[in-house]
Amino acid sequence: MAIIVKKPAPLTFWERIYLPAILKGLGMTMRHMIKTLAGGGVTIRYPEQHKRVPNNYRALHVMPTWEDGHIKCVACEMCSTVCPANAITVHAEEDENPEIEKRAAFYEIDELRCIFCGFCEEVCPRDAIHLTKNYEFVTDNREGFLYGMDRLTKTGRLVSELEAKENKDR
Image (cartoon, rainbow, N blue to C red; front, side, top):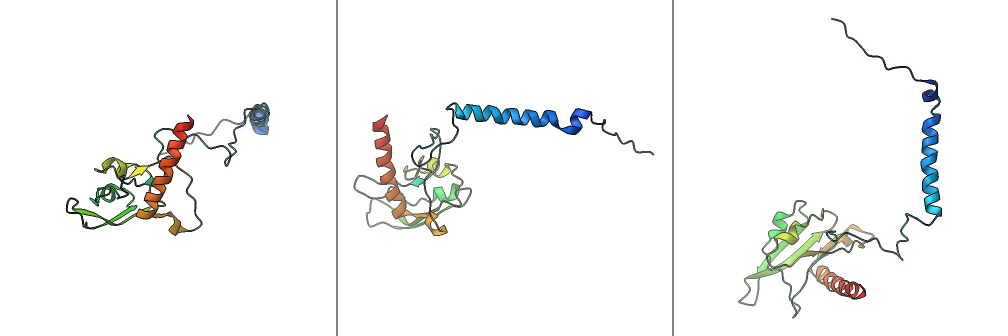
C-alpha cells in the first residue's frame, strides 16, 4: 500500500520575500505609536495612578473583629477544609467564655499558595474572613506572605479605613 503525501503549494514571489507581512506589522506599530502620541496612552503611572479593579476582584485576606476587638472566627475549620490550595491552617482551643465553644488558637493563610477563589469567604458561617481589592502586598521574603491572626486583623482595620475613605471620596 502506498502512502500519499500532499505537498504544499509553492510560495508566490510576494510570500517568499515576506514584504506584505512586514508592512502589515509596521502599519500596526505605527497606528499604536500615533494613538499613544495623540494622548491615548496605555501605561498606568503606578504609584500615582492605581488600576481600577472590577467589583468582584479578590485579593488580600482580612479578618474583621467585633466592636469589642474580639475575633469573629470560631475555629470551625470550614475555610481550611474547603480551600483547594490548602493555604489555610487553623488550630482550635477552648474559649474562656462559656457562651463560645471554641476559638482559633492559631490561624494562618499562606498568600503564596492561595489562588484567591473566595471559597473561604463563602463558606464561613460567622463572616470572619473577607477578600479585599487590595492587591498591593509586597515583601522581600517568603515568610512575609504568611498572614497570621494578628496581621489579618490589623490589615482588616487598615483596609476598612481605606474603603471608608474611598467611599467618602466618591
